Image (tube, rainbow, N blue to C red; front, side, top):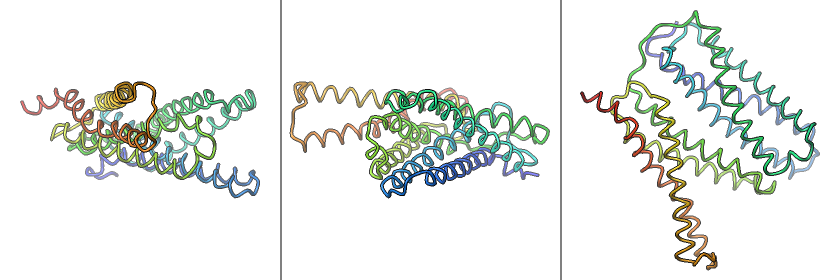
Length: 309
């Protein structure tokens, strides 16, 4: 039986389970790719980088989604603890694997139907967005199935206290995942070498870590001190507003720089151009801290007033 102090660990168990499924599934698919691929070192390097990128995206996106959904259902339906958590996680993992198999079958079916047309930039972006939607649906339905199967094992317990750190962590995850997903959407615009080069992979994750850390700091400063529930709906809203505002700031500054400084021609020295691009790349990251603090303060203001009353 679960110890009462362990009741808040259920979202962590869901996240770890989803991450293990991601690693297992992609290790198997990588082995199949290597067996079918020609013994070309450059091609194998691309496969390795592609697999590492996919595993990284899966760990971040699918693990975070599992945590978020488990937290949401816990708050909504008081599902904080189960007598047999391993059974719950086994059913959850089985559901995720079933969705992975379904996604693979759908992808291969589309490839047989469309052929080389799937390699077009627009088609690749559409496939990625569809895969992301399937991932969300797969995690949600798998967790729903797990709690349904184990519904008689649920232990009635009050919600865990002290959720400020957890909420700030989820805010950081939202922005880190947004960076990784956003970069993945533009991968089809690169050639194969640039898209799967180690430099691209490292740069993406540096940006994700910075965005996540700054969003964590902004959320931590903006959240009420004694937060009893994460309120995932409010948290997702703050994440979306922060992301939109940060990148609107970047686009606006970029347009102003091009029009006022370069007269709209874009002609300038290479060193100056690189400096400006770096600054424009840092602006959304710097905006993460301020906008995350602002929107967290606004959307959690009611809870702060209630706690102070």
